[in-house]
Length: 277
Image (cartoon, rainbow, N blue to C red; front, side):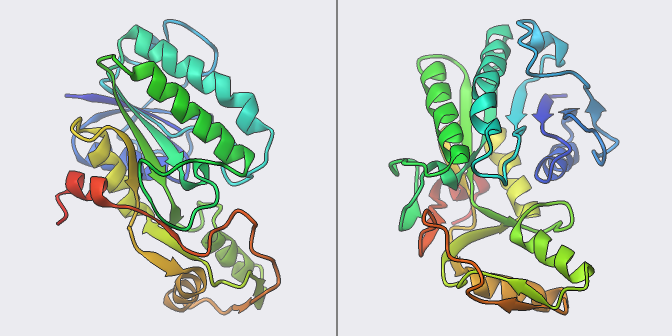
């Protein structure tokens, strides 16, 4: 039985990825700072991955595949944690490879790219405009250099906007659910005109699984729907589908300067992996 180590396993994305690998008969080693809510079929490895231990590959069960989802303050784009943790991520990944790890998948983000209008693919230039984007971009660049001319398979899984399992996340959808539960009748909103690439968390987990277990497509892979949808349409549909008694207060917040009017992921590589024509 093949072994996969999933870091950030108790997080919003991690729980779903753990389940996806388990459902495909992998032995799953799950690691996080808090192990609450992880599927009980997984084996919990309660070990600090950023302690700098050079023998960490053995300590973490000598997995065949690493899916590295762990990241602090992902929804706080200018948190100091992003740059503070950057070298810790790289030391951890270096030590895992030095120990014998041959396949790595790391969670990327559209925020590596910064302001961009249109489809994003693996060749889109990156000019990140938040500390989160800067750190993710730097980790990707360093990791791609590290695995070049080696036998390590590396997937950089670039995610976009995610919805579903909304009480566990920190997205706008989660915030709307929370506001409604708090008795709010209005939710302060932007213009809602910007168009983004939205993917359900369950579909995202499937894409992460399938991308991580193959080696034909390597490097940057968009995990996405490939379809731009106006933010207001997606949110209004969400409110209607969930029968939430709340209305959007358009224009209460300005659009962020690094938010494009229309941006989405090019799905060609993930479609090949998933067998979608």
